[in-house]
Image 1 (cartoon, rainbow, N blue to C red):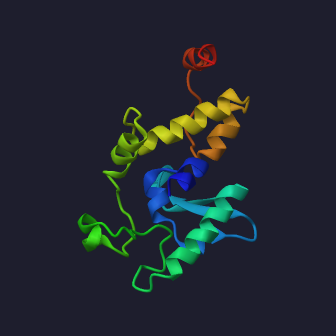
Image 2 (image 1 turned 180 degrees about the vertical axis):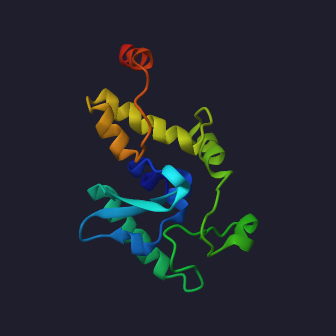
Length: 158
């Protein structure tokens, strides 16, 4: 799940809303639905998947098939055998509030949230020389560009 989140830089709700019908392995792309548009209506964007993500999702699909009681529609569901997760077993994730703090503790890094990954993706792309419009397209945002003084601060930190 974390690999997919890193590779797609999606919003948490877009990510948890994803279904298998939104994955097109032949085109190596995934459709993510959002309400973050004018008027709040549901709209989607097709995002390309990396080769690594494509292979991982294929492997995840096989793992999912082994669990007949799990939700078959949603891309990511709880398959944890831990006692604290028994009431959620087979159900799609909705929030995963404790996932990032747990993963950060295991990795011995300062805790950060899901949204920070979107910022990491944008910063990484910027550092690699991608234009602001290209980054906005990848992050599926329709916001106006940041003021030049903030862009200048970002450039000076590279």
